[in-house]
Each structure stands twice: as C-alpha cells, then as structure tokens.
Image 1 (cartoon, rainbow, N blue to C red):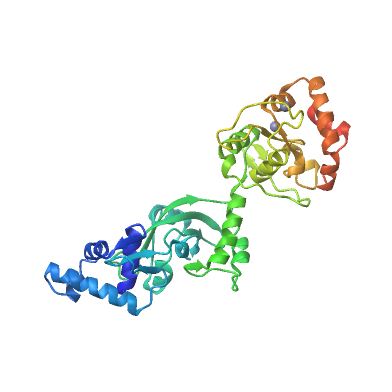
Image 2: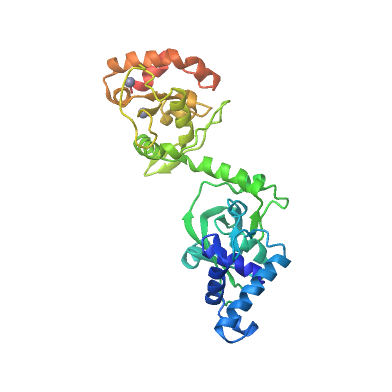
Length: 362
Ligand SMILES: [Zn+2]
Ligand SMILES: [Zn+2]
C-alpha cells in the first residue's frame, strides 16, 4: 500500500482531520513494519516518516480524497467528507457462500482482495448491499476499514449488518445502469447512481407488513423520518403475505404521511378537533386511517394504499370509526364519503355509499 493510501486510512481512523504529528504517531502504531523502510531509531524515524508523508502526498497531488491545509503549521490533513459519503457498494457473496454461512462468518466483516484496493479505500461510511443469486438479503453501513495480514484477502471492511427482504435486485440493476444485468464482484457505484438507489431504498423501507395497530404505532414513532410520497396515478393492487394464518397487505408509511400532510395535521371530520403536539413530528397528533380498510383489497383491482384512500383523523374520531355502533359511525362515514368519492374515483377505487356501509357494518 502506498504511503498516501495509508495516510487516508489513518485520517479515517482519526475522524477525518489531523495534524502531521498525529498522523506520524498513528502511522507508527498502525504500520509497525515501517522501521524496515526507515531507520531504527524512533526520533529520526519520526522525522523521516513526516518528510515521506509530505513528499508523497504533494507529489501525488494527490490522493483524491485527501486535502492539505497549508495555512496550518505544521500542515493539517483532512478528508473531504463529501467525497466519501453516501456510496453504495454491491457485494455478491459468491457461488460457494450460503446466506447462512455468511451470517455465521461475516456478520461483522468482509474481506476483499488487493485488486479492489482503490474502491475499498473509498468505502468508509458507504452502505453495502450483500447479494446472493440475484437477491439483496442484507445491508450494512461500513464503519471501519482495516488491513489484515491475510495474503489473499487483506482488505477488511466492518459494518452494522441488517437482514433485509424489501430491496429488489432488479431495481438496483436498473438504477445503477449495470450493463451485464448482474454484479460479479465488489462494486462501488458512483455518487449519482448511489443517490438514486438510496432514494429507492429509503422509500421501499417505509413499506411495512403490519396490521392496523402495529402500523399506527410504527407510523407515530417514526413520523419525523418518514418521507411523504406524492402519488399522482392509480397503483395496481399489491400482493399480501401470510402471517399467523392471516393475510396482510403491505402499506407504505410514506402515503400515510402524504395524507396527513394534505390535511395539514387536522381531523378531517372537523378541523377544530384538538389533540396534542406529537413529540415525533412536533405537529398536532393525528392518525392515518384507510377509509376502505386494506383487508378489502381483494375486491379492488387498484391499491387501497394510496393517499386518496387515507384520511387524517383525531384519535377520538379514529377510535369511533373503528369501535362505535354503526349508527354513530354512519354520520362520519357519509361526511367522509362525500369528501372523498371523486378523489377515490381518480385512483380507480370505485365505491358506493351502500357498499361503504356494508364494509363498516360487517
Ligand atoms: Zn384505522
Ligand atoms: Zn376528529
């Protein structure tokens, strides 16, 4: 490894910015074999290393991500954080590794061969997507790079691993404009492509398979982080999964957020209904209710999980619409039906007043 690459690693270790003195000390600590290249005595080694580091970096003007602050004496080095931020790495685990084996042996660390050194050096703080047989099964944020003494695979990167099942491999291929249609090796995608993929991952991550109560709770706790998804056209109905013998349709919390934003965090039964300020959103607390409940999805060709079918209700009205006697529900339902029927029509969710009553009276 070249001196300036080592400096890059050291800078990452030191948090992105360091003086010459810090770097030299860390250099000696991280690369104890330095003595072979320099003299044996510590003091003269230090000044030689300092001289070498400076010369190498200046001559190589420079390692792409290392910046030199010459206004400081002695010089300060730092990493331009923007250049190492927000990359996506796509890492197939190979033919011989199984997912189970991977989780046993690689839950913290992955080792790469020397040929990927350049990409590896830029991987800190990137997100890695592990793939097997055209399936993304795990993702991790890279927290540390380190060199090991393994001959074949000396380049380690460490991460916080999380198993995921919501990321579609084909989408990653599409957004990365990958020509072969398959990733064969360690691949660090450039920023523009990474940004596209991040956007996709963040949006699909908001898609959850939860019942009403579970979804409500997740929604309220994470409201501030949820990205509202604007929706402009009907979406085909999505497939449910089986959970404990029950069928559950996915819901994207981004649509629920769009719906309550649309209502300006007010109750759609009566704008004067007051609740309290939510700690998560710092807005008035309201709940998102699927006007035609998702469990009736089979009766519709188009998705019920769209803002057109989600209403913003104060907690009292929300409980009422679920638990009141039908006669009491009816007044609220008619009010909402009149407000929503055209909007629902636009999203190809046709429903009559009578059908609605039937749903809520069952
Ligand atoms: Zn509800
Ligand atoms: Zn209300």
